[in-house]
Length: 454
Ligand SMILES: Nc1nc2c(ncn2[C@@H]2O[C@H](COP(=O)(O)OP(=O)(O)OP(=O)(O)O)[C@@H](O)[C@H]2O)c(=O)[nH]1
Ligand SMILES: [Mg+2]
Image (cartoon, rainbow, N blue to C red; front, side, top):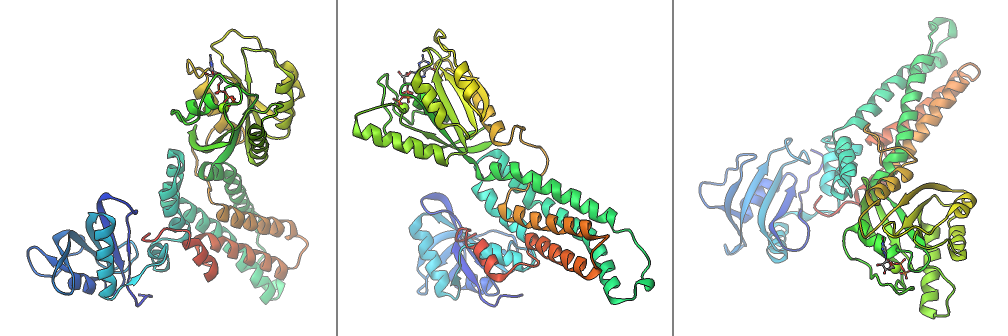
């Protein structure tokens, strides 16, 4: 066992709940359990993985809480160490009291992510899997959850291992060429394993384009002139009355941001003040914010009212979305059409799609959600295949890909020692994903993003 100390933390979220858990990990976990817990029946020999009912008591034997205790014996636990969980009443006070007691009995307060870090250091999970546990906790859509569970299952780790195998042989061969006279080394064709590694790496890097959007989401801003129906559409997509809607132009004065799940992609939707010439100072500031929101967005939803003719304002606002991937939304499709938006569409260099909606009848709303997802994902539906979702993994894979490319390109012309260095660097970058070759400070940076108790 690598760690000599025993850590403890409240593992459940703050606030009230049916159950709250204090978790301990380390060599003294069973000892601390015996010090603070009195089983209702039987002695204090704890069979692994069996729940026992009893009381948590302080130094004077006073009951602090009634609880269930469970002991996981090393190495059969999340961290690989001896782990104890005390399932208490789920309130802040009982949990803090129990935690204080446990700390008084010899444990140390855990840092954020320290349990998962121990699981990694003790070889229970590799780094990609450890990071997946955080993605599971933070998943914003079912698709994001599926991808995180996939990663915890270890597909990326397996893929990385197999690519590593493909690269190890060429590296060994090149090293032999450096160390021995050329005539003593039988000639071998390194191209097949290098090409296969290259193809697999390229596929992984490509998959990250979708994977990162599914995991991190995107920002989509609703723009259009006053009364175009932006706030109504925001509410309809959120399925609740978030923004105020009135027939009065200039209703929305400030930008409103809300998280939505559109076709499996987590999207921050931003409702804005309708853009128009105005004397009103508050409205003017709101309009400035609309422009700023547009600048920061990944996608523009440009709303034009289908029941009115196209106006100079519509064209002016459309101009602001030029260059930004844009979906044209013709609103109020339940009313008689008056709109001819051809001039707008023909002048737009980055228009991706067009959808007609009615927030009154609900028409076009599902289509809009799917269109937003599709546009953000580069025009394709979400792939069923495994996707790389983590920018850290993507960057490392990209460096490996570059190294393998350089090796392939240089095979005929460059000396073996240079090629060997190239491949060694590539293997090093590959090891960063599984955590085999990662620097300590980076490791700490990764785990510090976790919550305490995880
Ligand atoms: N018939 C019909 N009316 C709609 C529809 N969507 C919005 N409206 C009406 O249009 C008016 C303006 O809607 P809002 O959603 O407040 O428009 P907005 O673009 O947010 O307006 P500002 O906040 O002023 O920029 C309201 O009276 C809505 O009820 C629709 O799909 N059909
Ligand atoms: Mg509004």
